[in-house]
Length: 386
Ligand code: C2E
Ligand code: CA
Ligand code: CA
Image (tube, rainbow, N blue to C red; front, side):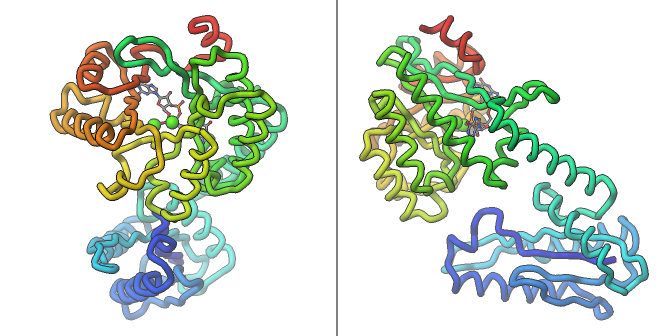
């Protein structure tokens, strides 16, 4: 059996901790790999964070499961980097060899495909099978048609109302992308945004979303705002400044009516650059909202320096807050904390009136969710709310 094992960087660990600590992580990766390999296995370093191994006497899935379980155990224990516990994560792809112990090109290629598929899955490893290959081809095809969709104008923005928690009037909308594909029908963003983010198509898509939202604002009453989702890496792209500035000027829209939603995770990596960029955007008069709040690793210090206007409590807490005392406590703590720092609080995923009422009693500022409306096509939104 041939395997490719790599030290994964899913949370951007390597950048967060700098070169010196990357070396520490890599050394520890080597050490644990050494403990994993058995005397007759052959292994060699391919890249700075990837090994190629030939496992002797492992030829079926069952034996592989055992070997992988041992690998998982070896990486359970966190490593201490600058006194902070860091969880090293490995991903592996395996493929059967045509002749045992003899590395061949085909197995190498197949193990590579299996590794790619493992990276996208919660599992530690994948074993190559024709399915893995088909999956890979499907994604390539999906990506191709997505690139065409951007050019052909098959993307649409849907709008979901954001409602004032006290008066229940609509104060604006979140713009959410949908893809109207002639072959696939209406495709939900979870199906194509992550793929787009890994491939750079997300750039033209995001600029398009920002421009469309601003053009829409020009036609809506001045009291309404629109929120657009911005992926972390594009927030640091200087073109975002020009795109926004030019569109606002062309359409003569007040910058305060545009909110940029960025996920909490952006604050973990590249913190300094990110804080500066957020401050710069706010300096232009735009609003910044921290999306999916509660799912990342924010500290209290983070609140103090945060150049934002709004916190969106993640729907995972809101959905169950009436049943789960813990979720309720988290929602309450976030609202109080945010208010102490003069941040507005939006709750997303408000699915029923009881939750809406409770959030309003807790002094949450704005509500969004199926209790009011689903994301609606533009015409439908305008018919109902303008
Ligand atoms: P998000 O930014 O957290 O958006 C909120 C999601 O919650 C939306 O899913 C919305 O339809 C859903 N939602 C709203 N109310 C409720 C509710 O009461 N209950 C439940 N269970 N869900 C509710 P949607 O539209 O499928 O979007 C999913 C994700 O895709 C978004 O999560 C966002 O991360 C991404 N996305 C959507 N549009 C864009 C876009 O234009 N650009 C980027 N970069 N990402 C986008
Ligand atoms: Ca959002
Ligand atoms: Ca969210």
